Image (cartoon, rainbow, N blue to C red; front, side, top):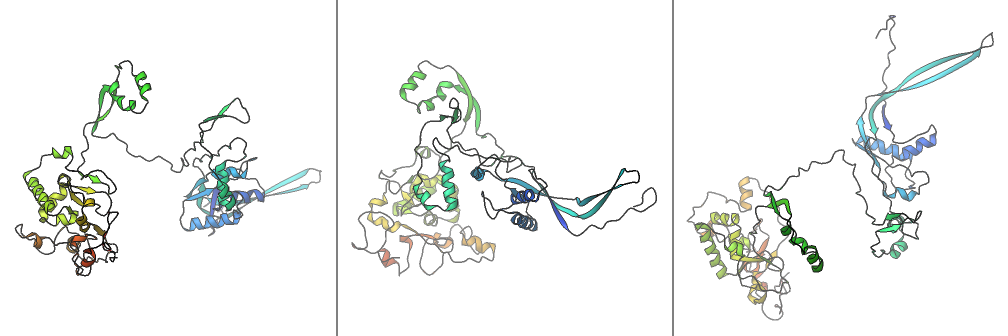
Length: 476
C-alpha cells in the first residue's frame, strides 16, 4: 500500500494468538477486583457464595467450551445491592451466544511529554503507539432477553419462605432441618395485607411463573388446526348448558335456568363418532359378570361374506377351546385368512372379550365363559419369557419369516392344510427356538420335562382361589 506522498504504509504481521471478546452484560470498572468479579460470574459453578466460583475457573470453562465447539455461555450475575444472596437461588443465568468474530485487537498507548521553554511556557508533546495483539476468532454476546427471577414472599411472622428453607437444607445436607420440615396446611386466604402497608392487599396464591420463556429465540410453530371432522354449527344455548348443569348443585341450577333461554351459540361439533373396535376388556379383580355378547354398536355392523365365514370359524374354535391367545388363534387359519382377521379387528370384538390384567391378560375369551370360576382354565394361563436369543438375520426373507409375515421358500397353495402352510409358532416343545414368540399358554407347552409340572394335581399344587398366575409349586 502506497500513500499519496509515495511512501509505503507500514505492514503488520498478525500474531498467531487467538483471542475472544466478551460483551459483558454489566458495568465493569477499571479496577482489577471488578474484572475478577465479572469473570467469576461466567464460572459454571453455581450457587451463592460458592468457593469454586472464581475468575480462573471461568477462564478454564471458556477454553473448554470453545475447544469442543460450544455455542452457549451462562452468566450468573451477583446479587443486587442490598439483596440477600438467597435471592439468587431462583434466578436463572443469562445466556450468551458464541458467534464467530473477525476483529483485530490492538493496544493503544499514549505518551505525553511536557517541558518548559525559554519563555516559561509549558510545551506538551503527545505520542501514540499502536500494537497489534491478535485476531478475534469468537465473540460472546449477551443479547437474549433475560429470564425473570421469582422469589416467594415469606409468610407472616417469618423471614424466609419454607421452600427456600428446604432448598437451603438440601444444599447444606442438613438432616435435622429435613426431618423437622412440615408442609403448611392449605388455606383459602388468597389475599393477605401487605406487611409494609396493611391497607394494600397482596396476592397469596403463590403461583410460580413459568421457569423459562426466553430460552428459544422464536416460538415453535406447532401448526395448530381444527379437527377436520368438526364443523361450525349454530345450536341452542339451552342444549349446550346441559353438561354444565351436571357440575353444579341442583338448587343453583334450577335458579339459573328458571326461565327458558332462547339464545343461540355457534360452536364446533364433531360430525363423526369414534367407534371402538377392540374387544371388551375386563379387569381380573372385577367381581361383575363377564360379558355375554358384543357391544350393541358392533352387533349392528354388517360384514362381507368372507368375514361372516371367518366369524363362524371363530365361533367353532371358541366352542372347542374357550381361551385363546391371539397368536395361537391366528395359527388356526390360513395366512390369507389370518391377514383378513388382523385387518378387520372388529371380528375379534364380536366373537370374544379379553382381560386387561391377571394370568389371562390379552387372551381372547369366549363370551359368557369366566376362567376365574373354572379350575380347568388354569391351563390357559399365559407366561412371558424374557431373554431372547440373539438374531443374526442375513437376508430380508429370513428376517420376515422370523416375524411371521412371509414363509421361507415358495408359497404353498391355498388348499394346503393349515399345519403345513403356517408353522405352529405358539407351541413350545423345548427343541425348537421360537425367536419371534416369547408368550405361550400353558396348554401349548409340550415339553416332556415341563408338562408334569403343569399338570400337577392335589392340594399341594392347586389353590382354592385364582389370585394370580398359578402352576405347580415345583415349576420355576
